[in-house]
Image (cartoon, rainbow, N blue to C red; front, side, top):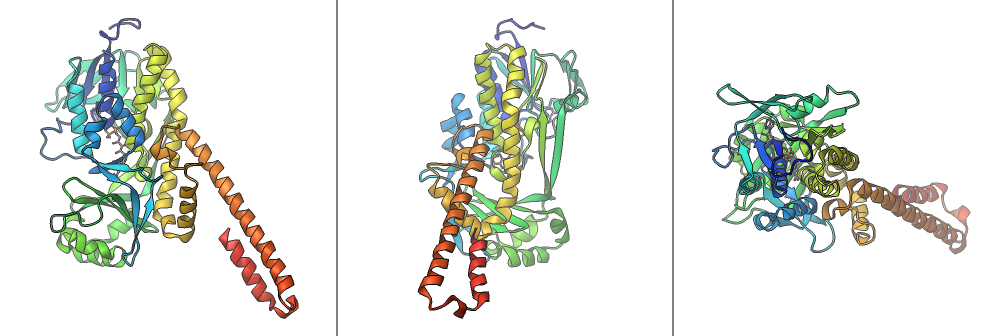
Amino acid sequence: MESAGTSSRDQVVAVVGGGLVGALNACFFARRGFQVKVFESREDIRNAEIVRGRSINLALSHRGRQALSRVGMEEKIVSKGIPMHARMIHSLSGKQSPIPYGKKGQYILSVDRANLNKALLTEAESYPNAKINFDHKLEDWSTDTGLMTFLRPDGSKESLKADLIVGCDGAFSTLRKQFLRLSRFNYSQTYIPHGYLELTMPPLAGEFAMKPNFLHIWPRNTFMMIALPNLDKTFTCTLFMPFDVFEKITSGDQVIDFFQTYFPDAIPLIGVDALKRDYFRLPAQAMVSVKCSPYHINDKCVLMGDAAHAVVPFYGQGMNAGFEDCIVFDEIMDQYNEDFSAVLPEYTRVRVPDDHTIADLAMYNYVEMRAHVNSKWFRFRKNLDNILHFLLPKTIVTFTRIRYHEALQRWHWQNKVINRGLLVCAAGTVLGGSYLLINKTPKISNIPMEKIWDRLLLLKVWQ
Ligand code: FAD
């Protein structure tokens, strides 16, 4: 094996996992001239009949687009995405109200996961110095020697060493297992009580059954449904509910009763028969949040994407954050002249606080999307946030590359400012009201005491 200092042309970078982040990362490393070898446990999804995976479509936003643009893939992917300018909130009565994401003209894109993954694999393969090895499941590797062992579908094994091993093997990373044995490696994983299940809303008379340029949301407190548009004019609806609610629904008629109670406007759009059938097609899937630190071992191995930070999907940032990992690593490679012994610790130092923040924000949005979007207070605050957007953008997470942890700090500051502003308004109203009560009414003693309390209490709730 080559030692540090050999030209990148000869150094071997093994990318474990040919999913979204692994395939993109292969392009980043191949552009630098490394000998890139991707190892993916699945068969080539470009030839597979059924692609097993997580969500069918994903929200691609600024960070992800920036990463794609660095490898010349942005336009190709954006041209196959559907812009979503706002969330469309569906009330129980079927009323629909839009809540924009950011400033006018800003939008996120609904993209097809499988197409995105296929396009990235094809792009990676277009580099003569990159090779993708499908049907290679990493079984084990040594932190001392860097020797990796792969299991092939016929039961045989293959071994390989590389100068750098990049772990992009997802939330249940095999590579990460070795990190757990090391001293001072921090790791936590949390399963939320909710699972998710996907349903398809077909086109209606050849057109989208709902307005296409929105991320549709049916918030129902402890559970909710969202729908993202697809190029074939279908919507993919994702139902998020606690597992125990999923388990209580055991027959087609119960599914319809349930939808009649909570999502009545969706029944004719999905179709009664399709609902009864598709609800039971696959069991509900679990969602996990993973945080760990450090992301590297010596100059040998680094984790990126879900392998480093699986987040719950409620900020639409999991893939975007994983794609941004690739940019951050690439920038540090420039700063440290591709010296892995300096690049890897710096990557951990820079990236851990940001990835941990997006994991926390996603968990916060898990609560916000389910419950708050229903409340008048949330909608009032959201409108206020949107008015103040050009000054104090919370949406910087979605529409800029400002570091996640800085976005959080700004958001805390914004909340403080808004809450104080509202407090001042409320205090002004109380003082003004009291003045009017005292001066403009014949005698305060003529007003029943409980009425004064009622008014003061109303002001308190408004805060
Ligand atoms: P993965 O996509 O999991 O890819 C890992 C790859 O590694 C796979 O191809 C796997 O086969 C391979 N692999 C695994 N083990 C091995 C092994 N031992 N050896 C070799 N290969 C292996 N993110 C967004 O940005 N926007 C969204 O709107 C969004 N929506 C989501 C909705 C849902 C319901 C879920 C669950 C997630 C969503 N995400 C979203 C998150 C996004 O799916 C992930 O962050 C993204 O897939 C991470 O990519 P990855 O390449 O790191 O991991």
